[in-house]
Image 1: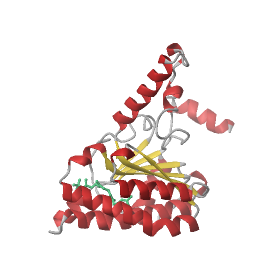
Image 2: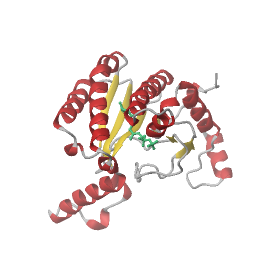
Image 3: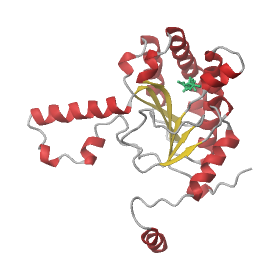
Amino acid sequence: MMEIDPTRVPRHVAVIMDGNGRWAEQRGLPRLQGHRIGKESVRAVVETSRRLGIRYLSLYAFSTENWQRPPREVDGLMALLRRYLATELGKMMKHQIRLLAVGSLRRLPPAVRGALRATIAATRRNTGMTVVLAVSYGGREEIARAARALARRVGRGELDPERITAGTLAKHLGTHGIPDPDLLIRTSGEMRLSNFFLWQLAYTEMYVTDTLWPDFRERDYLQALAFFQQRQRRFGRTSAQVERLRAAN
Ligand code: FPP
C-alpha cells in the first residue's frame, strides 16, 4: 500500500472522470456500460476520501458540452445520476457527507433536478466531508454568470466597478465558500482542462494518469495522493522563500 501522510492530505481534490466510453468500446460494450462501472469508481474515491479526512471532493460528472452527445447516452447518464443519488443517500447520511452541486441545473430533466435538490437539502447539515458534483457545468459559463451578477449590482449602484477584485468575482461563482482545489486528477491520459473549474484551478497541482475512469480505484487514488505529497507548492514564490516560510511555521 502507498504511504500517505494523514497530516498532509489535500483539503480539496477535484477529479475529471474521463475514459468511460473508451473503456466500454475496448470491450465491445455499449458506452453506458462504461458509465455504470465508472459509478463504482466514484464510490471508491468518495469512500477513500472520507476515510483519509479529505474535506472537499469535486467530481466533474457532466459538462455543458456533454449535452451534445447522442440523446440515448445523455438520458442514460441522467438516469444513472438519479439512481446514484437515491441509492447513496443512506451512506451519505451515515458517513456525514454533504452534497453540493455546481452548474446550470436548470437544464437538467426535472426528475434529476428534483433528486439533486432533495439530496442537497437532506445532507446540508452533514459535516464529515463535502462532495461537489459538477453537472451541466462549464467553467466559462460559470465566470460569465458571475460577470452578469456583478454587472447587475453595478447597474443598481450597489457596487463600485473600481472595487471589483478577484475575491469579489469568486464570491459569485458556484463554488463560493469552498477552498480552491489543491489537487486535480484527470484519468485517461488527456492533458486538458475541458472547461472544468477554470477560475478555481489557478494554483492546483495536476495529476494525469492513463488509467481509464472505470479502472481507477483506491490504489490509483492513493498513488495520486502520494504524488501530491511529493510536490512542493510555491504559489509563485521561490523555493528559498517557501523553505523559510515552512521553517517559521
Ligand atoms: C467521461 O467519460 C465521463 C462522463 C462524461 C460521465 C461521468 C459519469 C460517471 C462516472 C457515472 C455517474 C456519476 C456519478 C457522480 C454517479 P467519457 O464518456 O467522456 O469517456 P471517453 O472520453 O472515453 O469517451
